Picture 1 (cartoon, rainbow, N blue to C red):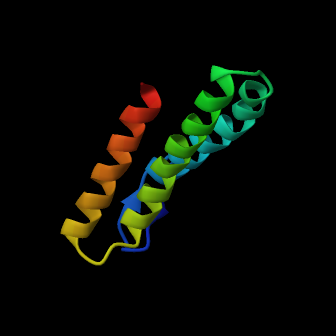
Picture 2: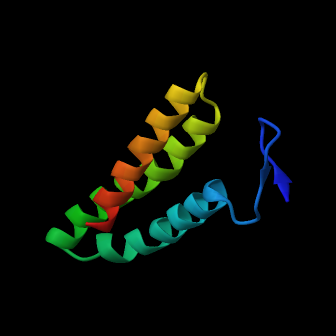
Length: 86
């Protein structure tokens, strides 16, 4: 088990690691989409923004000032995940 900043044991493969790994996979995919003209280029840019935002908001949540702030940041991450999925 890995300890988080707040001292709580986190299982291997926690949300921070998984969202970072997901963002890397999207970063590797986007040049292929961006190389195609038309709608693929537009979709690649939006996919990159929303996928990167998931992990960024998860990181922000882990640096939150309160439980309410933590929940709000994770809620935003969930919204970005739904957008990316769409």
